[in-house]
Image 1 (cartoon, helix red, strand yellow):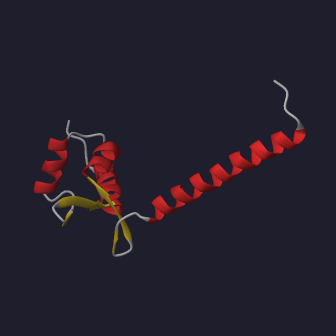
Image 2 (cartoon, rainbow, N blue to C red):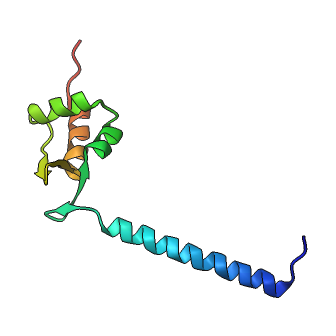
Image 3 (spheres, rainbow, N blue to C red):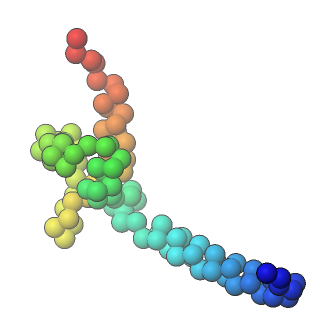
Length: 97
C-alpha cells in the first residue's frame, strides 16, 4: 500500500488530534477524584485491590477501627493516606512465634 506524503501528514494529524482528546479525558478524570480535607478518597473496590484482601477482611478492619471510613450517599470511602498508614502499621507489628 502506497500513500503519498500529504495523505500521510493528514492521517498523522488525525491521530495526534485523537491523542489530544484522550489526554484531555484522562486529565479530566484525574481531577475528578473525590477529596476530603484535601486528601483523595477511594472506594471499597480500590481498597480491596490495593490491600489484596477480601471484602470480609475489609469489613473487619472497619469494625475493629483499624481503618477509618466515611459514608457519603450510602457509599463507603477511605482516605488514601489512611490505607497507606494501615500498610505501614502492618509492617511494624511484632511477629508471633
